[in-house]
Structure formats: C-alpha cells, structure tokens
Length: 186
Image (cartoon, rainbow, N blue to C red; front, side):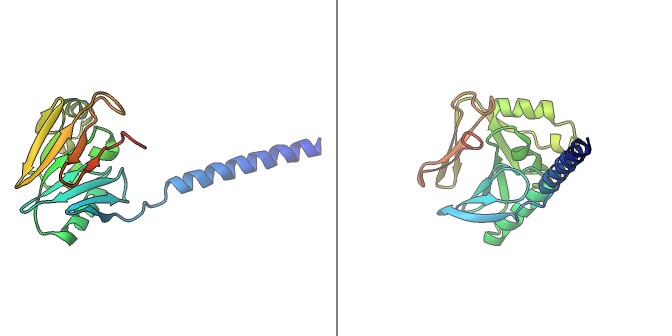
C-alpha cells in the first residue's frame, strides 16, 4: 500500500513539474526581431511575436508583407526597417487574416495603405472589435490577382483559392523570383 501511495504522489509530482515547465517555456520572450536580406531590396523579418514577415525597400517608399502579432513586435520590425532606409512605410500587404499576421497593424503609421484579399478584409472586419485595430482594415482588396507598381518595380498578388484560410495571398516579385506565401507552407 505504501508503494502505491508513493507511486501516486511521484506521478502527480512529475505531472505538475512537466506542466509547469511547459507553461514556463511558453511564456519565454521571443527571439529579437531581425531583418535579413533575401534578394536585392527584399528582406524577411524573423523573431518577435507572430509569423515571419517581409518588406521591400522601393525608391521612395517601403512595402511591408504581414504585420506581426503584436504592436510591440511590429514596432521592432519598423525599427529594423529604419536601420536600412529612411523611406516611409506606405503599404502593408496581408497574406491572410490570422492574428499572428495582422494584429501588429496597430504599430504602423495611421496613413498606411493596406491591401488584402476581399475575404481577409471580411474576416478582419468580423474579428476586429477594438477601435484602434478597426482603423487598419484593408482599404484595397481583390479577388483573384492584383498588380502593384512601385516606381519601376512590379509586385503581383495572387489568390489561388481557399487553403490555410479562405483569403490566402501569395506576394510575388517577378524580377527577383521571390514569393511570400504566408502560411501556405509550414
């Protein structure tokens, strides 16, 4: 009987220890936000809270792909961009509506132009209850494809149909043959 009681308490102790270790690991600070060059003026952003993001430095402006998960992580991303250029961030393209890609919008300038698939805009409209975030709903939407000109640079946006979400977008830079695909691939 004593062995059964010892076994029971040992099992409970191990279970509690395992759970507390898991919770502690989840609360750790994320890696610092860091921008890395992909090709030419195209960069990826890792670290912080939320999914990876990216940006393109144009002649007069910056285009950002996805906004991170928190206002704080978005501001760290903006600080990384400012290390590379003094050009203002004028556009944000969202690859889909998941919070780890859009909730950081509150860290961006209020006048930023936001583009997304029309379903992403609809999903965000349904999800954003906070007035500050609602001011960042996409102003430009499309259904299948869209072409954006940044000076002599062309950026193509494609929606191939429902996948990870119903509004997934691929952001493609044809000259560099670089694509940002959001969460279409894990």
